[in-house]
Length: 221
Ligand code: E4P
Image 1 (cartoon, helix red, strand yellow):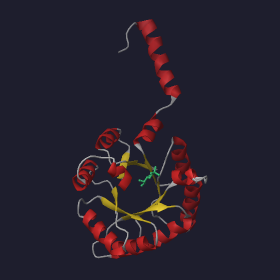
Image 2 (tube, rainbow, N blue to C red):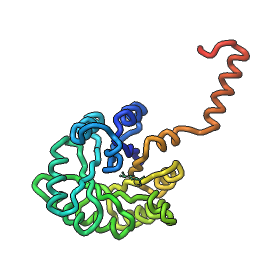
Image 3 (cartoon, rainbow, N blue to C red):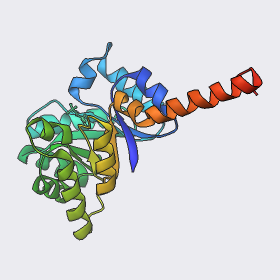
Image 4 (cartoon, rainbow, N blue to C red):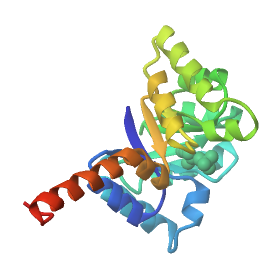
């Protein structure tokens, strides 16, 4: 499973890139609204940091024509832009048009909350499907179970469209969607850091260093 970072923050992206684990970025209007400065230069900077890896940026328009217009403008910003299109009848029309057009624009269908929505998005021509698992948990459902079901249906239908498990809130989500067969998990920076940590790793290191300095008196080789 690949890791994307769910952020529009350049400091977070720069740091996570140095870990060597990042394969892409997803943003959304909420994440972009937290950042300073003009929108397009920010998107271009994120795209250049990611050096060809996919960067999902969402349209704001709600009409088919408006979404197509925005999608074309966004995709002209950098070669690694993936346009995020919200699920729905209008969204499906947009994805169908963009994925079959002369200049094919890769689309990430976002705000997906059911297997049926995912199946439609695939047929419309989506390049990625983003089920939102934390938001399902928020209303008392089991969000990770949706990814389990979706991945199983994709396997039996021989659908290769990558599933991006989104709206991830904690490490347990990551482990469950990986076990389910999600191709990608897009995680907030705080969760990415949690993934790298374990209290026994920290304790183990403290003990090694304490034992070494007791017998050797210094903490470097
Ligand atoms: C994914 O593409 C979305 O940007 C994101 O995961 C939404 O997460 P949230 O439900 O925490 O806002």
